[in-house]
Image: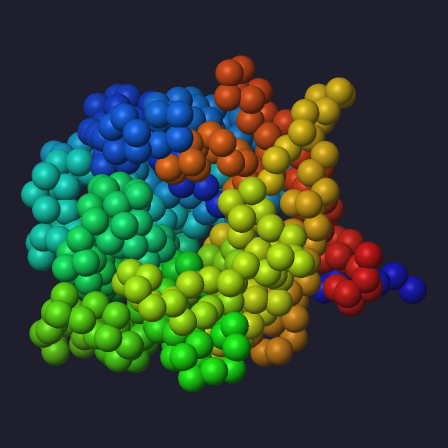
Length: 454
């Protein structure tokens, strides 16, 4: 007797990308610059001074890329919109040609039976708004809601899944606290203000969608389960701080109406007092939550390590990716079950999950990437385990569809299911992409007996 499918028939099988990482042509057809365009063009900010000026040239090659999605068997695709392509100054004047690109993209996806999941913001704030203070400006929530309304009115008749923000933690930690990502600030006092205004912007967009939209809207956060290095009071306290800083920072206000108390300890005198009314506003009901998961952290107390006084303990016996992230599939099960337990039975999507590994060139032109294939297999099994534990998981989006501009790492790290030769723009589906396609075709049977074999 044949094995029954492991994933439900209505499960979304997707891949994810973001605008600046794949589109190229950042100033084409009347678009304005973003903070990432300016950051990448600042010498010394990005590996080898590489930029997203061409990237994967998806702006011109999107139909070819949708054909590859179809070849993989995807029934969903998560992408982001470049705010400054639609509104070159971030507000006011609309650029119809920029908006038209996303209308054509959505139409082409639907023609191929692929459901779009549209992310309004994946880190590329219009540079004109950054010059007005960016996410430090309290007006930023209104700017974002106005931008969101334009997209809702143009595309809600075709887009049924909307995301407000992607990974606000990364925006703040990398862009405002540590300065390693756009806009490149390094200011302990600025970070909590930017975080709060991002949450207000998220809420303003959800509120606008309730007035304008007819389908579903949610938030996407990156989560990283924390485990103590030792069961000492110091390491347990450090683990709570680390967990509060990355996992609860952007979820507690949305679902529970307040920030974790550990944040005041972490930021000290830099922690502001926020108006009580803001928390009522931030707590807008969501239709779903997206979880981006890559790895875990084993935590120890580390006095003097700014600002958390914590450090990760490398697990040398485990496989690590090209970014030195530990491969730990159990962490995906753990974090999904934690979200469901802490915040209630909300529909969840795994909106990013993947790994950067070195992809050796093959004589026949193919790309054999067994480590990425194993990563996908084991994390899909972990997703199944969470579902069997009662998690309402609706879909899985591999990161990433294409090798792409990996932010400050430039083109040195490859996450794609599809290899991109950046010189020729030739696309080649990797062995991991073929594996994923077979998992989709069989709804998980190829993961092994009951998801545990193989």
